[in-house]
Length: 109
Image (tube, rainbow, N blue to C red; front, side, top):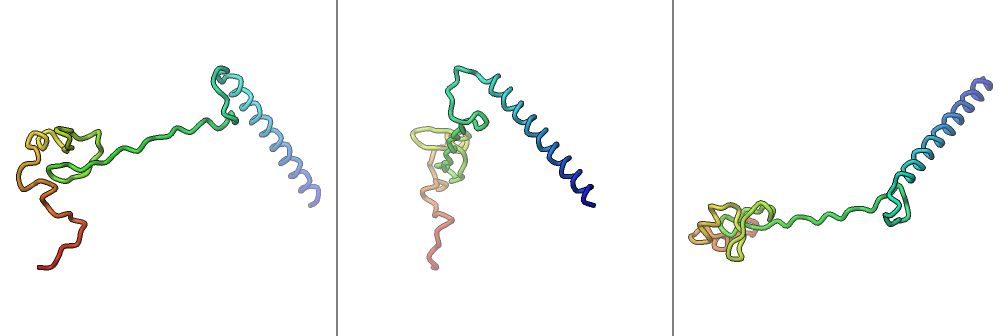
């Protein structure tokens, strides 16, 4: 039984050495193909992270729906969810400022 364990251990060590050689060759080839004019940030395997700016969510001045700023329309310094609401403006009782906020508790009457 001892000889079998010895051979299994030798095979595992050989496989581990082979994997380390393959990994080091990949790293060396990546470093060789990288642009030499690019500034080095310390680690070749860890590229600098891109900072993604979150998109602003705005409320329609007419109906009160919330949606990303890139999907709506602006007119007169106000934000609208569609061209129809932009054209209608904030006139009438459907104005988001005139209706109570659904998230606030209402006083019982």
